[in-house]
Amino acid sequence: MPTATEAGLSDTQRQVVELAREFARERIEPFAAEWDRTSHFPRDVIDEMGKLGFFGMTTPEEYDGMGLDTVTYLLALEEVAAADAAIAVSMGIHNAIPTTMLVKHGTTEQRERWLKPMARGELLAGFALSEAEAGSDAASLAAQATKEKQGWVLNGAKAWATNAGTADLMMIMARTDQTGARRGAKGISTFIVPTDSPGYTACKPEDKMGLRASNTAAIELSDCRLPADALLGDGGMGFVYAMEGLDAGRLGIGAQGVGIARRALEHCIRYTAERRQFEKPLHDFQAVQFKLADMATRIEAARALAHRAAVRKDAGENVGMHASMAKLFASETAMWVTTQAIQLFGGYGYMRDFPVEKLFRDAKVTEIYEGTSEIQRLVIARALR
Image (cartoon, rainbow, N blue to C red; front, side, top):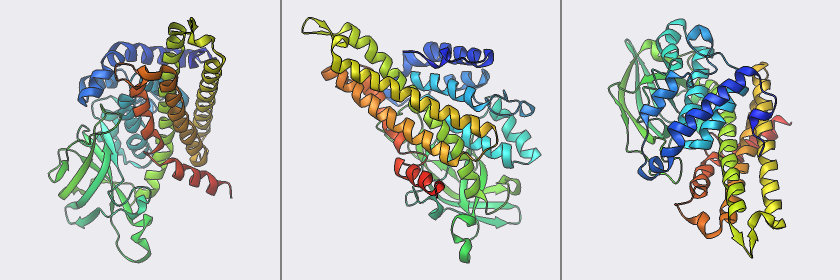
């Protein structure tokens, strides 16, 4: 199958893709199945990626980042996701939401203290918006931040937070205004919370269907005291900042979906060439050929949607609708392609000894996190009015 590296990339893009592909093949893919079985988060591998610049790809050079365009970042993320989507999740969350927030709304001091070491890969960041009773309706969150003379005190709980137990700092959304009309989205603020802060507790990691090497956990905030400069940007604007970050995050999930689907197709191409039934290879059957053709076509379309949205983002356009389109189509493509992959592998596809079973499990959550497919359709439909 033609890969993205054959599509007229610049020299810089080609170098980044080759670096990401080589690292993924040597340091991620050979161990991904074991990490999946044991739910092991390989912080040593994450740190190696950070030293290579993969956690500051779009961060401006003035903040020690690589200053690359979003398409180049998505190309690298696709390579990582093709090796193990669980590792791509940490890379995607860090590069998208916390980084976007600090670049756009951080003070000079906050960028010096947090953004620079994040870009150098010295600090791993995460993001916590959802709560047990505030998933798709994230604006109904209940965690509270109370202003005191010396700073802020956070109380409440967060759910399903990526990197909750492995990050060095988390961007946490909490309610700062409980009065009147500001009880909704406009009463929410963003806080930079080092995970070693007293009162911050990451709960037991969730036992997930897929992405098992990615740390996902609830967070308990119990009189978590923070200095005044832990508030990011303007008070009450946290939900707006979160939506900005989610636009970038959804493009990353688009790339993850493409990486998962592409790897499933690659496995299918090899398997159908080797597996023989009725005295000929599976790929000689027209039904199999049509299935492979549809898989390849959807993957190319998903990649194109994500990259086009990335170009719009770098041009300064509002990409809310386009990011949702990319996330929606790529995630559903990943789920559809991996389902077809299991069908092509037959009984072997259902066994954990074969790779497509893991890809199927990893694909499912791309239709759920950072906004379900239903939410993406709502975002798109509202933008068409």
